[in-house]
Structure formats: structure tokens, C-alpha cells
Image (cartoon, rainbow over all chains, first blue to last red; front, side):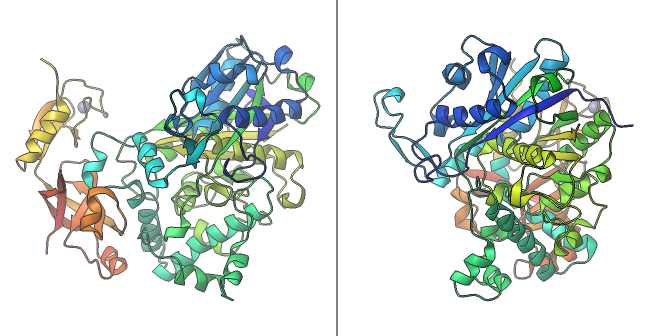
Length: 430
Length: 130
Ligand SMILES: [Zn+2]
């Protein structure tokens, strides 16, 4: 039986995902201005007034090493009109803004608050100049951040006691093993698995090209054509060496800067607080694991537990969903694993569905229609909120030319944070 | 006395010994060792030397691992199911690096652990048995 709404989403906001050193829509912005831009959009979207209507806020950021900030809640409250209101910083790495839904829901379920704002933001491609006397002397002086250094900091979130001693990089098992095991179990050749990986990323690029807020605006076909290739799959194979074999280097996530925000309220008040169609949270599940994350590469322990908990609370099953977002980070192939572990596809069917175009926005089993972490861009803590933004817009029918063929009434949002926190939230249009 | 699990593990690793923790109540092993039994919740575990026997179930090949491991790349990185139960992700040797797809189709294979010095680190490497 489908469960009762435990909380409702009544407003969403999201900045363009890009680089604050170069992307016109966010160029020159500080972290506070990214939060502010996403929050203003969410507050206006709901038709609220921050001072009068919002009782509390939660604010997420994963990487203080690049923002040079801690306690973003106190540094940002007055940028949002929330001076004096209760708040906290929180982070579960790349599942942060998925977890914010559950946190906010608990706030309203307890009766403590009627209306809660959640935001998360990240700047990953640059950092303030380190030559300054004080941090506050350089809010406008940023320099590009070496991606190796950025990942070194990011991996502070992976078993720092033992993992590095196993000669691991996270990318050894997060993607490659799923690709090998999927081929081995369901009898696909390496070439066929390569094509599935290509199709996932090609679809991501197509989806992102339709989205004005995405990092990558060019389709893969356009990129291949410019490089002189008629067949984009040939371009994929010829210009894209194996990073962690059998995963290709350019199938990786693409880091960026950006922020997302949303407003969660008591489901009984939702219709009174906004004219927009409320999107109800039916349930959520979280699960945390340290290394090892799985014994079977096609069933992450934390995915299995988080999906099960979310479905139980929501009173639905994976096959009931009209749409699913999976995290699809560095692990292109975790898209197969997560969709099947989550029951959106039966075991062994996601690969075929991807090859047949069923997961496109025009398909009957759509997935990751923003372009995901590869093409919409990955701003660690903010990314899940960008996916939520799209779910809400799609459910309301506000997605314009990228509106899905499926009428999305019930959707799943799955994310994971380094390393490893899985979060699944089930959303239903009222 | 402070319960120094991490130091005990690494000090023994230097001498080629794989030390794990075992739950005296339910028999579950923890490797590399963490402080509490995740099966039954028992907080009082005892040290045991692991056999170093296991099976390699799957492996990828790292071309650009970075750091100290770049010097020994490319190498295989695999999922090992240890004889005592724990799953361990680590460097594996004696598997097919020329055709890793074919190599993976032949798994699982029995393997034995050896501690090897790579850069400044002592690494538990599992060798596939011929
Ligand atoms: Zn036990």
C-alpha cells in the first residue's frame, strides 16, 4: 500500500553548474552567492518570504579545502534572510542534498518546524589564493585548483586507515568491476559492454545538451563530428584510452561549481503555502558502509539496504517508479547495478534497455535526464539537489523541451557519498 | 592500556604477518581489523593471524593509480574472498594482464597473500595459484 506523505517539497532552485572562473551565469560568484542564487530561486518558486515563512535551514558542503570555509550556516544565514533562525551544517559527501530531504522531513514530522530550507553548494575547480594574510582578504581572488589536489582532498572521505594500503584508488572497483561482472554474468562481450558504457555517456550528453543549467552543452555526436569522426562510437574507442581498465578515461564524472536548494514543509500545510503542485516525500532510506562496499559487484550492500528501507517506508516497489535517478558518478556502470539493485529493472535487463534507448527522456524507462554527474556536472554536495530540481520540474510539467515522454507521478532519487553512504528518496506528485 | 588496533596491524604487516580480529562469540573475522563485531555487536574481539588464503573473484587493471603506485602500474586490482570470510580489495598478481577480459572469465582462482614493499608502503598482495 502506498504510504502517506511525510513531508512535501514546495520549491526548488539550482544554479548553472560550471566554473566560477569562466561560466557566464556564475562567473565571479562566491560560495555565499551560489547558495543565495539557488535559495532565492527556491523561495520564489514556492512563493514564500524567507523571514516570515521559513523556520529553519540545513546547509551542505563537502570540501572546505576548496571553499576555505567552515560553518557555512552562520556565514550564509543573512544572505538568505534567515538571520537568527535555527540551522546546521551537514554533509554525507555526494549524497548530501539527498540526505537533506530526510533531515528536513524529520524536522517537520517532529512538529518542531513547519517549513525548512535545504541548500548545498560546492566550488571544486578553483580556490582562494593562498598567499593572503586572512581568508577574508581574498573572496574575489581565486586561482584554478589542480584536479589531482582536489581529488586528494576528496578522498579524505575514503577509508583513510586502510584503503590506500591496498593499492586502491576508488576507481579500481567503482565502475570497472561492475562492467566486468555484468558482461560475465549476462554474457556480453567486452565490445558490447564498451558500447553500453558509451551509450550511457552519449545519453548523458544528449540530456545535458537540452538543459540550460548543465556543464556540458555539446552532444557527443557534435564533439565527434568536430574531431572528424562520422561514427561517434569509433571516436569513443580511438580517442579515449582505458583509465582503470575496462572503463575509459573520458567516461569519468566532470567536476564543477554550483549550488542547489529546496523547501520542505509539513504535508498538511503544503497546499496553503504554495500555488504549485506539492511533491510529496513518501519515504527514504540511508545506509553506510566502509570498505568493502560489496561482495557482489552487482549489488552494493548500501544500495540494497537504502532502497529496501525507502521502499518499505514509501509502500512502493522499484518497478512502480516512473523515473529513477542513479548517482552515475565515476562509475558509469553503477548505473546498471543501482537500477537493478533498486528493482527499476529486473536483473540483467538494464544493459539491454540502455542499448535500446529506453532510458532516454523519450523512453518508457527514463533515467538520469539531467545528464548526471558526467554531463550535467558534479558539484559534490550540491548534485543530488540538482537531480531533485529536475524531478520536481518534470513532475509539474515545467521541463519544456526536455519534458519526459513518461508522465512522472512516482520517482526515485538515489545518490551515494564517499565512501560509502547511499541515500534513496521516494517522491510522489500529489 | 590503549587499544591500538591500527598500530598492531601495521607493525605486524612489516614482519609479513596478516593480523585480524576474531569475534569469540560468533566467530566472525574482521580484516583489516576494525574494533567491533559487525555481525553480533560484540565489542571484545581477539587477535588472530589470518591464513593468507583466499580466492580472487574479479580484477580490473589500473593504468593511472597515482602516488607511489604509479611506479608499478599497470597492475591488477582485485576482490579477494578470504578463507576466514572477509572480503578484501587489493593488488593481485599472477592474473592475465595481457587479456584481462579472458582472465576474468577464468575466475575465481585460489590465491595466497604476500606482504610486499611498494614505495614506503607494505601492501598485502594476493598471488593467484597456478
Ligand atoms: Zn560476533
